[in-house]
Length: 95
Image (cartoon, rainbow, N blue to C red; front, side, top):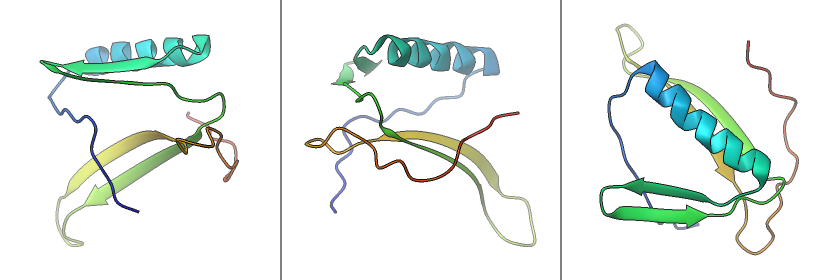
């Protein structure tokens, strides 16, 4: 499947700023509203379905014997035509 990037942004932010952004996303998801992502003159609006697939990934990139780069990725995914996730995986817990 070919990938087309519709929107992408990357910037250094404080943990408080990131938490505020994620809270805004969570509130829109709870209300069933569309999400509009904006940065400068770029923007995209998407409408996640009631049950998208939710992927959480923790990664370490770099050499096995030295320091690398750590990341946590959160992803919502759904088929444009079907709209519903397939229910894979177990219950996510964040402690």
